[in-house]
Image: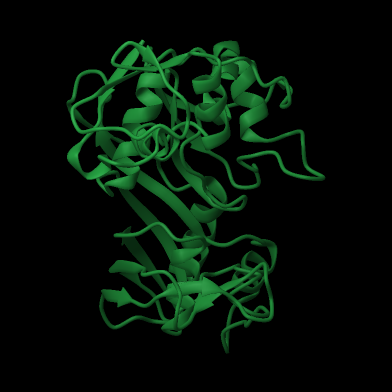
Length: 310
């Protein structure tokens, strides 16, 4: 049983509207169904979705979820960095899709998580609270309980989860900086995003880790979490990620590049982006914890070739 108090700012709202704010980890349709079935009560009384709430009332919810039965469990290798009863931290490889979608229902991280821990079938999206692009590698956190799911979603909404990315960008940067530009869907190419008026606020910080003649290894920190944010922002200021097929354009080989560098660049067919560090407050202990994952082998080898051809 999960009990939460109606705050002053929700007073006068319909119960279904207040529930959507109090319990963001569940869908509106699921919450409405639970109200109708009597699995949600207000001050121990069964209410209707349209009834108005008052400040200080206690909403109790029985958060037992029925298995969705939609996503199948698959034995997919997972690199688990940390695990306890509340959460998992894993290092996602490049090439692994996070969620199933139309035409791609198998072979995803969610399929693999359900095989790793069958109880995740009763957690929304098998405990996945955020995502990385298919070709981006690095750290992800997964909730193993409903309580942890709520706590992690709340931290994400409050922007208190810390990520540090390592990216290899085209071009020799002079120094780091801050990019504060709104991001929205591209008006023509609907699967792409771009800096545009009317987009959602997006802020990216970047610091130079290592400079090369034609490339720069950077550390990137986000204030916001927009789709493709790092890729869009760095491309916007003229430093697209190496290997990015969407925002980097066609491959440009540096003038005078050695054969080994040409070959390494031609064979690297994904954006050079890795979520290297993750920090958050543990949902049970309330202690700050952090984890790190080294740059994967394919990206490390490319950096080594660039470094040796510097």
